[in-house]
Length: 98
Image (cartoon, rainbow, N blue to C red; front, side, top):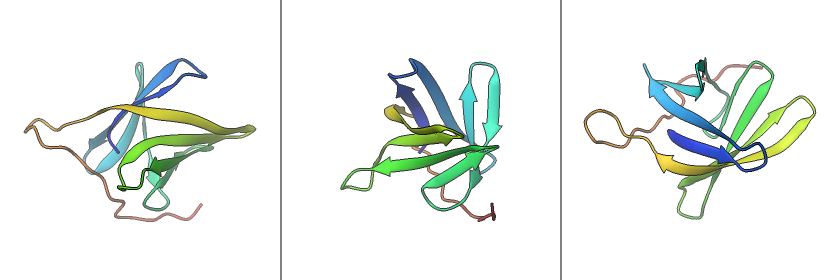
């Protein structure tokens, strides 16, 4: 899931990274720790992200929901790698109730 995700509708790129086993969404100078609701569903505040996967189970993007904004699609445009050159992955270890 870590990587860069682009919305052509908004012309904006979100960066997702893993820090201390948490998925972090970064936009410019702002960063938000995402809460894992399930393996493919994360959120923060009123925002929800649902990751989209292809037939090979590889993440290809996500859909953003926030209030009246529904199905805002972001396409994955690059992978993120940790400092050792290994691809990072994040599996939720906690599930929080909404």
